[in-house]
Image (cartoon, rainbow, N blue to C red; front, side, top):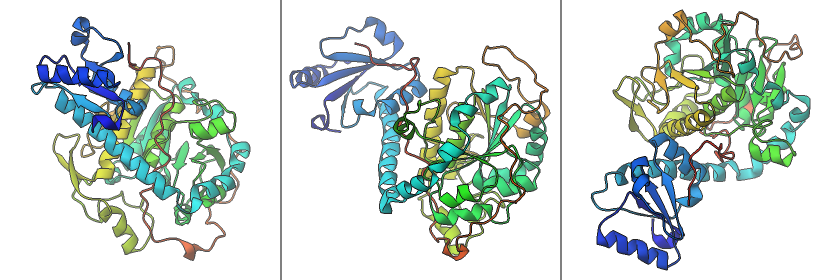
Length: 454
């Protein structure tokens, strides 16, 4: 990052070397804006000069979230520090992860915009904004009903979790949110959802509902507005458009009440929805973000959650990405991919954002061999099923609820089972999905987040 590329210069710590001090003064004379990154201890002895501001490094997670929300401060910026400054390398590592996520967003946006498919799908799906379940109707309903959330994705660890998930599902305080591709297998295992989340825009994704069982009457299908229209139309129950903040603003609706953050994947959307409905405890099942047993066709997804596509299509999904190694929840190495690593970064960002506004938020993972993420604690699913956590109400009190579900009671689903669209099934494509749910443009940062001070 060259200083000519932006107007900001970050000074890490309290430099003492003449070379760095001279360079700072040169940049100021050239009209650059100085941002001093300081620890709370360094802040006590620091003095900000003219055209300078400070950012406090309280924790890695808070700083990373702040940088994500304010990428205009560091994209194209220059970083200066004494050679012996120990904070420089960790800072560059944080920025590198965010730069990787930013580049992924940019390249994804380019791919998604091809052939105007998102716009065409949105025009067809806009009817569900008016005719579906309004987002503000489900805002904080889980908090009011004293619910915790089990978020079910499609990672391979899910195969060993169905028995315990079935036990947990019987808890009246449990709200289940699952991604679309787990629906059929979950229903076969007696784990019925409160919400099913989807975002894939390609027509071949209609195969999700082929030969699928009828959903429970209370289950709501929640999708992005750009999802493949057949996903909405083939669902016999109630539907909810998960509007992003820009779409909500276009409709003159209130961001954060009528919309949620986007994400890089359907699992991110499901997580954001869990927070939107007010769950103070969110448990991740099948969120592995890696290949626990190696990288082959047998461990990319849980059994029965992968569409019954041809071998070439299945192969494309896991060979498209290069191999990388990350740390797993058991402390050992986990074979993963750059995309899955980015997904982990975005989970960490969202967790920190939500904790800023909801400090009592707890996030657990049931995947011992899943990717380790900051803000997520591993818990054995059998132990959890034996004694689920106490759930905090919004007023901070604890109440063990035995009431039936207090989630919105939509009109009963039609008697027809989930059926395939009338479209020709032979038109299902042969390209595997790596499509982000929506762009990760953040909503306005909560007041409790760190902000630059002058």
